[in-house]
Amino acid sequence: MAKVSPAQFVRQVRQEVSRISWANRRDTGIATLTVFIMATIAAVFFLLVDLVLSNVVQFVLGLGS
Image (cartoon, rainbow, N blue to C red; front, top):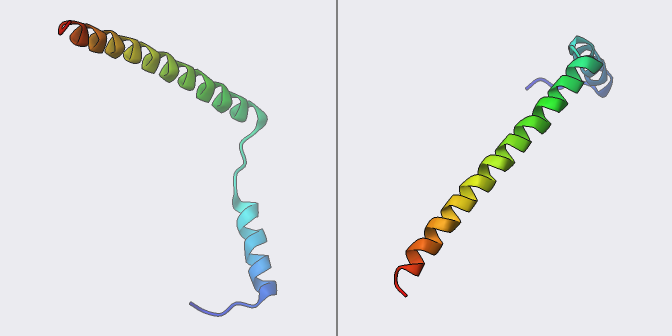
């Protein structure tokens, strides 16, 4: 790698930051809402799977007694 002076490094960083296309407020809100909805769906799914598996295990263990 080529050696770069600190001043040139800072200039390059500022140049790269200016190229970034930042999300606007609406896009950020939609992404946040989507994450919350998907997390809720996943939580409900795993709750149901846990309940089913718990009942299956209790049934199997109850057969021996």
